[in-house]
Amino acid sequence: MPTIDCDPTAARERLADAGVSVDEGNTPHERWRAEREGAVAVAYDDKVVVQGSDPTRLTALLSDGGGRAHVYFDGASRGNPGPASVGWCLVTSDGVVAEGGERIGRATNNQAEYAALVRALEAADEYGFDAVDVRGDSELIVKQVRGEWNANDPELRERRVRARELLERFDRWSIAHVPREINERADDLANEALDDAN
Image 1 (cartoon, helix red, strand yellow):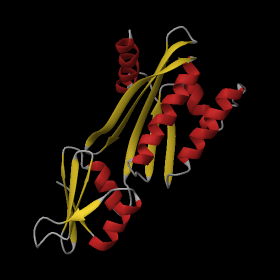
Image 2 (cartoon, helix red, strand yellow; image 1 turned 180 degrees about the vertical axis):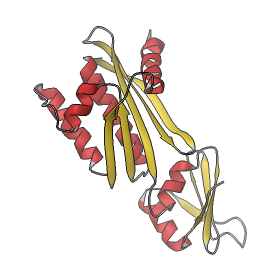
Image 3 (cartoon, one colour; image 1 turned 30 degrees about the horizontal axis):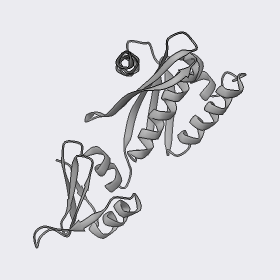
């Protein structure tokens, strides 16, 4: 149960700015309460206590800095091009914060990889992290995003621009290529999304 030492008035404003509805407290000691996706934040005179099954998003919004996440992504295409999907996973020192996998229609493997990267970065941004270490098993995508390789395909160029726009939202970011076994969870999520659709 994270406890954040902060000014409750400023914390309430941060939540309101992020679109979280804030209600009055349930007891005379509670200044206010806010609920978001499996977590409840309760403000007292000089701190906010966050409880629930998924406290990370509210904690990130309430902290002065949103913290750091490891972001894993993977795309899958059967047929290249063919039915495609994405998988992604956000991990902090507390463990897996969020993950997802979904079909994206027909795409090449590289298009699916970029779609997975974009979806993962959107999720990290939604969670309010201010630093991300991005990891994927596509050397092509990693080197294109870092600017080491050119993106000759116009569609991949557009996707690279979108990924870079999202990365620039973070105070600090890195992106690195990792072996498939390090990226196993994102790979599993992408493949499960394809399997579930059959």
